[in-house]
Amino acid sequence: MNFSNIQPISYLKTNTSDVVKQVLETHDPVAITVNGRVQAVVQDPVSYQKTQDQLAMLRILALGRKQIEEGKVIDHDDVVALLEAEDNES
Image 1 (spheres, one colour):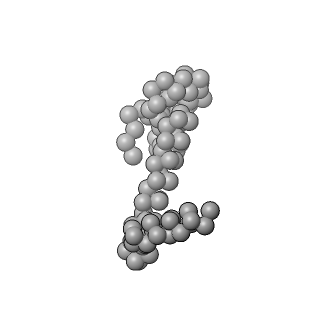
Image 2 (tube, helix red, strand yellow):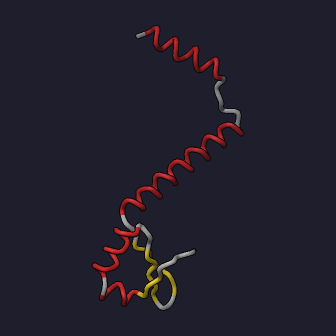
Image 3 (cartoon, helix red, strand yellow):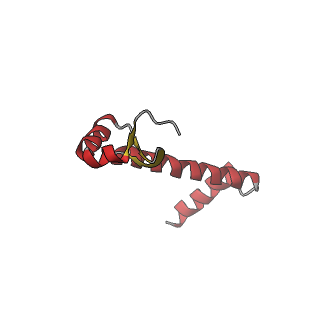
């Protein structure tokens, strides 16, 4: 883990509002240590959501790659034909 800002939990306890203000302004996470080891990360909600969205996209891409490797694919022409058939049913 690479954190540019690491603080002990005692700092968080006495400066909570400052830490929150900092992560909201900089969008940089703050690592919190307990007994010298990183045990938690304080992160702003926008950055957290961005990370979650990126992870979801990576999972989708990994699933797609797995489906390609397993041969679970549909040819472009077949997809077009299916879409045209659905359109004609409407």
